Image (tube, rainbow, N blue to C red):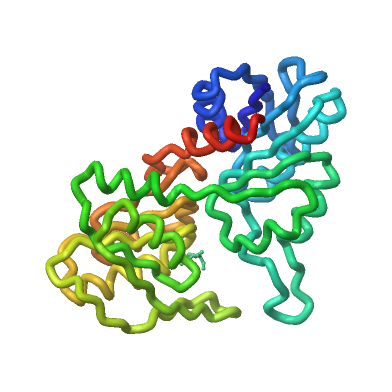
Length: 293
Ligand code: R5P
């Protein structure tokens, strides 16, 4: 098996290959002055089982185009099978038509990635697991929540309360709580579909003097986590930490969260960022090995 670390996941792709003791085929890539993506596989893939690791964090559309190019060229050059690992799957939040006339973006992505010839798809903490049913090739979701919780356990935070900033993240905090054992809860969040403004329900928790970790799949603008952290601090929480699989950290997100009273923001290398201190390489490598890829 050969691993191709895509332009958006160079470090993670290499770590996965190192863990599996697999050969890598480097990708030569550049952006033309007019913005088009250029890409070349610098090695032989003919007759090989190929794993492409490429996240689709910002700039999403560039990274998606690079992904299509890598799959298509690998197939075109005679790769036997192509497994695609997309640690952060962009567009998974647009999985239905919320307003009339909207594109169902994730469906468009799936149609195109399947047309480029993939044989299997793996992702991590997809925003909506039901999206995987839209694939016709085997598609799976892995979760980084145990790895994130273990990071906090190593910091001495066993017994911390785990909080989901919205109902969608409840399953995530349940996983974290299995490691941290401090109990868990969730908030109800409302986002205005047109303005994007976030409102978090006022809810009382038994957290006075306790440490709390807010877990989410994505931190984008930071509005969701910042609102939760603020509420927890007002309720007397001792230290509040923010954790996520996908630290997109758009604009002033980091500043916004720290100013709301957070102690630390912890993310994974599903999306490379200044807070990506937890690597999902062992998780991905183990999944590939278990499936005999
Ligand atoms: C949405 O429901 C996701 O799970 C995250 O809560 C959301 O993407 C975070 O966005 P932001 O950081 O912009 O509040």
